[in-house]
Image (cartoon, rainbow, N blue to C red; front, top):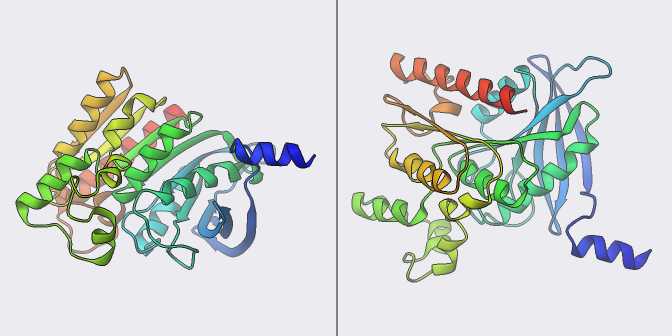
Length: 292
């Protein structure tokens, strides 16, 4: 028995460990729970959103990975509730180093492991159909979702909103427009660039894992995005097409970075961006219902 347990752990087949399951009540008709679970020796947190489910039935699952490195925002929580009310069990992970999770922010490195471990937990949710799981993410979460889908071929669909797909071209863009950050996380992650930190860039380059993606992909991108330029969507589309994969790209001419999650809830949003954001939500929901 001891040999079998060790073998399963070495193979990555061990059952995921849920450490705590705290009920937070209902919001907008959705049951909300805070989970703490084990990810590679660390206790990390996340929010589970369970919509009403008829007795004897189950809902498909969306792992919805947030943007940035500061945890789950109010807007991401509201967007998760919206996804749940559209008919999905939703899990929003707080990656390592965020929202009281162990560890430190690694930027699309250990966070990928946190998402992969969260997928394993879905069979512990009675209302969830753990055989139908999609990954969706915004910005940082989009990159995490791609890298995770490349490693878990049971994922049925990926939705990526304004994520960095070709990290080398993105770094060149940041240098060209003078937007390379000087904060501690950026310096720790990227240093002085690809020549100084070749491995750091290689493991975060989403286009390089395009051949490993085994499911349909939807990319949502604003053309007024000055953080992740809209050409990034085209780089991934081309990489997926070369690999013979299914990819749908939707460009929104008046949308800024962050539109999917934030535009529905902010006041200083143009009517055009708001309308295009609602269109992006319809497109995303149609895509998820089709493939889950």
